[in-house]
Image (cartoon, rainbow over the protein chains, first blue to last red):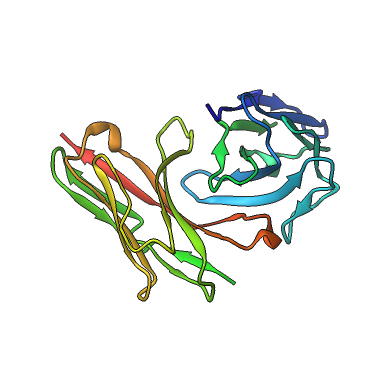
Length: 115
Length: 117
């Protein structure tokens, strides 16, 4: 149990286009979902936290207009990178937490390459 | 604000030997959780072990155990009988029990563990 999927696993796009990444909790209801960004050989950087039905809470320094997060249901959250640029190229990871549980369950990540 | 420090960017161990990864943290809270996560080359984050701060007994999961020293704010991970599959990045993480911050994880910078055959 407690499986989190991400789609796509790898995406290449042209500069200026928008990309949507989906994060799904497959066998549980996720009251909270987290979006991270990770550069090679570095730690995870929390971008934002989203609760179902609420606006996402963004970490300081993260552009909310560039990284749009929607948590429309208890099993789905999406991250849209708008007007992507090469500097947005990174590995994006989502995680999900269910009510009363102490741990987060992580998706396999999405590698974004912006040309 | 809470911080997590992993002072060993890289470590190596011989197969079948034991290795200890260090982690220290800073907090003024009394109730919290500590985690060790493993990130293999596939980059899928895997929970290795979890420790509740209110528990004095050190957590153990098969070959993985922790040395939790609450007063010293230290949380080291010991891997016994190391296997080639243990090679990965290991991250130490802290989570407050305060619901006000969505219980987000505070991460260390990670330790890259190599296992030599």
